[in-house]
Length: 187
Image (tube, rainbow, N blue to C red; front, side, top):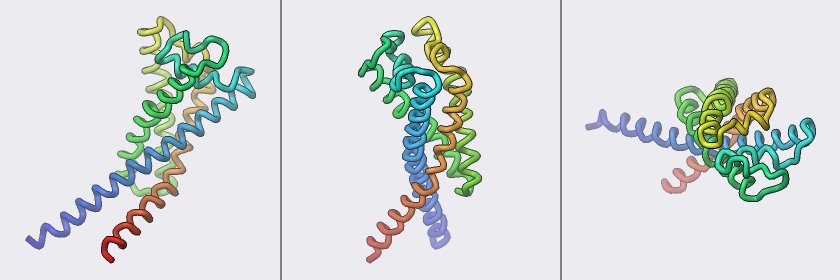
């Protein structure tokens, strides 16, 4: 019976580490997704001469098609774009990052490497494979590719990956909260 105690403690510890890694990854991913969105807004405004809201509405076109791009600010397209970006794509990639970071030491180099790998994978699978297939199937053409130059799309996804560097301070904060909660329970 005593041999089960270390295993139970280890399993519990592993479970709480996975939970903190996933929560930290989701929070870091939300920050990274917003950093990416701000970078795209800056690129579109400063370098491409488009309106600040255009890249978010392009993402909204995933759901709304060409109606998302009326040439002016369109709140439903903007909200759809923000929701799709943050609550679907960013959330999914964040969970993948969290599952992977849980398997390796949480070092700066590992977070950087996994973050960049996540950014590149999101470009390859989302922007280059998934989005074109869905756009063509449901809207008859790839609205993303027509509105977002490939080089800027790649750069934005690399920025997204670099944004995962906020995982380390977020994860440390979650650990401090956990340690404080456990010590308060013991008191």
